[in-house]
Image 1: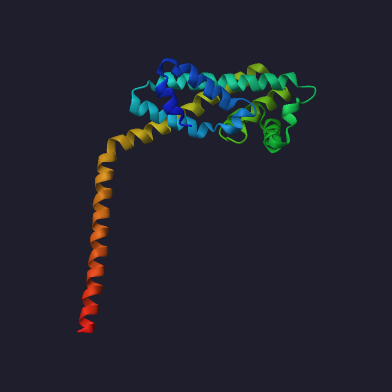
Image 2: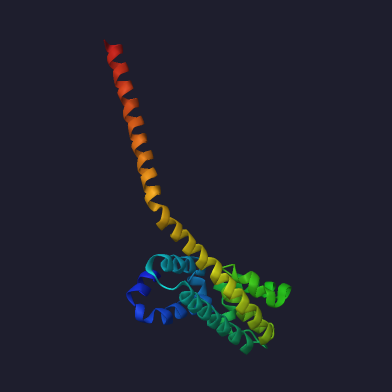
Length: 202
């Protein structure tokens, strides 16, 4: 599904959709199926070509990600004495183990390191809650981390698309010229082979 196409077709609810998508991307379990490392550059590229406000979409992405993380943290806190069933799921066992190990080693800073690892980050907030990281430390680190993470990936998408739009005409022209020259080279070689064969026969 092309997320940017859906957003452009429903501009009147763009912000709620952005918040929902990013909340799901950061939520436990669901987040494993929604790669933010692909979604955010696409949204950044969208702002470069459609006139949508970069900072408005950025704000929605940050808010959605924080909501998803808060949900995971809250669920983890509820399971402090005993891990909840979904935390024991075999399918996500490795990710959970890595997240728990990361939190044990880094404490609240695990939110920073885990956020940039797609296959781990949905499990880090629940692990932080389960292992007793205080809410104050959790949200302080999480807000700063999410703000940076969204800015980097959205910014990369916007810069890349902006550069393509700006220089695409030159790129297409150069590509066409190279293709034309290659065709001429192939034709010239075949012509030379044909003439050699005729001379040999003659």
